[in-house]
Every structure is written in structure tokens, then in C-alpha cells.
Amino acid sequence: MLFSILTTCYNQDKTIKDTISSCLNQTFDDFEIVISDDGSSDNSIAVIESFSDPRIRSYRQKKNLREYRNRNFLVENARGKYIIFVDAEDLLYPHALEVFAYYVQQFPEVGMVITHEWDDRLIYPLKLSPKELYQFAFLDNGAFFGGNFTNMLFKRQTVIDAGLFPTNVKSGDTYMQFKLALTESALIINTGLAWWRRSSGNVTEKLSPQYSASDYCHLANTINYKLEMLNDESCPLSNSEIELSKTNMFGSCLRITFSWLIKGRFKKIYYLYKNLDIPLKYYPAFFKKSKHNYFNTYSGDNPMRTVVKTMHPSLASTE
Image (cartoon, rainbow, N blue to C red; front, side, top):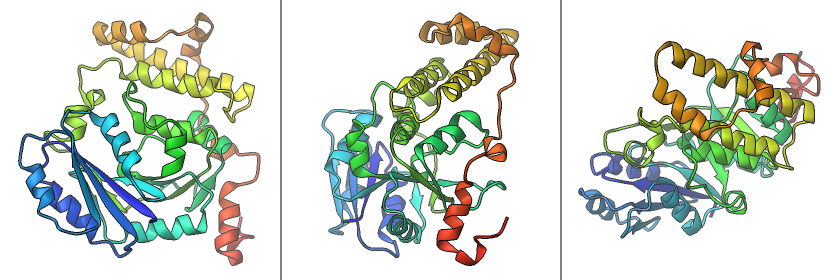
């Protein structure tokens, strides 16, 4: 089986019918839908069970697992080679899996496919190596990481090999992208395959405290896991690039802190520095403007040109 559509549900009886219908209405048919209801108290289970399609497998959790444990449960129970998360309020356009199938057949070596908005510097599809992914993420304004789950397709085994989604990280989806990019290449394609919605009572609102205005630890949490990746022995960046990445990141954090100080947001500052340690040597980074637009000064082979040459030979010589 090529694809597993993984759906988390929590009190979404008003939207999950449309979600499941959009998944069943695909022009590509080699897929399954695996649904895990995380202890809903509404009519969600009845709506799910109203579908009799054999491509659907559903589970009801006796104990509330919360977001990332529930997602890990789905990954472990999936059968497809590739997984995409379509939560119980999201929609897949009918051509979505057909487009994904075309690209994974053209680029079977990539560990993830990420849909991304228009960028006038790039032509999609764009295959990026781990080094290039990290250069874009840390040394450029146009990082490809951080989009919602419906914008990305993961190779299931790579997620398992990476240890599944962490349950102690606020934004586990972004963490997983950074984690995979340590060793896996990625394919960037144009967006427009899914419709991500946030509605009252959904997984994002109820089970993901990072979206709560009172959660001041999110910035520290994000910086800490980015530091974890930069310090990993598999980090594809050079030592000078790693140092510049840390300087940029800490400098930006310090400037955010200063803006909070001016606005009197002392509680945010307290929680940030309670959970984040900024070495003294990086404090001068407050005065350094981060270096951006890495792609505009790219000194190696243009990653775009390789893809264009592969797929459109007549355009290979175009500068």
C-alpha cells in the first residue's frame, strides 16, 4: 500500500464526515484511512462508524493520549509506505494523493515531501539535500519547515527510525522535519493539495497547548530543539554555519525579549529564561542583524537547475 491517511479526532462530529468524505473521494485509490478518536464525548464515533468503506480502520482510545501520543499510535498502526496527517476538520482535494503519488514515484529516495507557497526565487519541484535544507532553515528567510501537517508527506519508516514524534516538544511536526532532515533529503512542491482548518474544540485547540496565549514556554522549547539538531553529530552544516545559525537564533530571541520588556510582558520573559539558557558570548548578537536570503548568494550548484534538467531537458540551459 502506498499511502496511509492518518486522522486524529477529538470532539469533531460536526466536521469529520466532510474530512472522511474528502479522503475517500481521491482520484488515486492505493490508500487507507486510519482514524484514532482520542476519547471524544460528542457524536464523533457514530459519525465515523457510519462509513462502511473497507479502506477505513478506526480506533477509539479508552484513555486520552493527547496529540502526539495519538499520532504515534496512528503511525505504528499504519500500513502505507507514506503517511499524511489529515485531522478531523481538514480536507484533501480530490487530486491530492494522485499528485503525491507522481512525485514519490519520480523521487523515491526522499524522506518527506513538503508543499510550500510560492517563492519567486524557486521553481518547484525542488529536491534539497540535508545540508541545503538546513541552510534554508537557519540561514535564509524562506525556511520550508513549520507548516501544518496537511502540507507534508512522510515516509513512514523514516519517522519510525527517528523515534516517532516526541511527546515533550510543543511543535512535534516541525521537530520531526528538522530531525529527518539531519539525514534525509526532501522534495518541495507547490501547495494547494489540502485545506487546513482550525475549529473550536479540535485537536489543535484542546490537545496542543502551544497554541494557547498563556503558554510562554513555546519559544524556549523551539530554540532548545533547534539547538539539539545543531549540536547533533549528524548535523550537515559546517562548524562556521552552525555558529552563525546559533548567533542568528539567539540574536533574534534577545530582540524578541527586548520587545516584550518594552511592552511590560514580564511573565513571558520569566518563563522564557526559566526554560532557556543563552550563553553570555551570544548576547552581543542582539546588535547583529541576521543574515538572510541564503538562496540569493548560493555558491554551489543551483538545486533548482538539477530538477529542471531532469524533468524538462529543454529548459536545462536557461539561466
